[in-house]
Image (tube, rainbow, N blue to C red; front, side, top):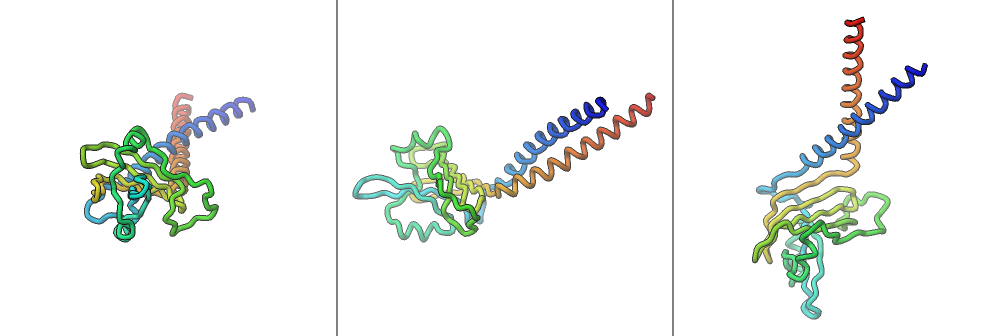
Length: 200
């Protein structure tokens, strides 16, 4: 009985170790495959950061916008730029600087929401007149949207786009990690039995 319990504990620990490793690898693969190169057609939900200038106070306000709403938004906001203003450059250079974090997130999914509850911006590279920007938005529908683009004052060139569902990623990872771990443990147990029978 004690030997059986020891074997059961070892089996469970090995299974959990395999499951954890498989889950992390599958999660990494899931996120990696969701990143695509933007070539001709720009995704509708491509996230873009726009800096609005207040001519009276000379202050800037940052706004997010979907690509499919970009032209309409710019027509209704005259003084705008895709470039991070010079006085904010250092703030956005070192890490993904938090832009928004809404504490009053809706408990139910709002599938058509255009308001992120988490957004962050990072300047990956810059020159005199352009910036390479990574803009991350977790929308109220639990989809992660990440846009990489080159920005000048009045123009953007999308480079990469990443879009995935957080809960879907977790369920995908759990199901495949469980299946792979179970198969490895099953094959291993059969192999051990065969080896024991051969030398018994």
